[in-house]
Length: 132
Image (cartoon, rainbow, N blue to C red; front, side, top):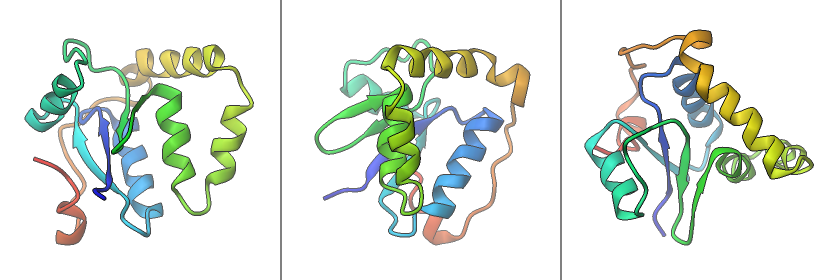
């Protein structure tokens, strides 16, 4: 089984901080990563018939499904050893409320958290988990 793939906004400071958090808490290495802006990210979305015109959400691609927005966050936190409770808490809220909150953050992420074209330098082991 291939690791699950997280597609994220590669220029968003908040998104990059989130990916750093996931890497630090993914002790089993179940996730691979690709930015939405990358060729591989666009191809993965296109292969799933998802438009690459607007890149405003996180996606989790597994062998069986593709998740986006709060559903992706729930599935990701379920796979992080000490954060399964977070996924449970998020599921207590109706999807409409979860995704509305997600959309608000996504819409304002650049003005709140900023943009960056600099990436954290990772070890070779972690770099190999970023798809290109």
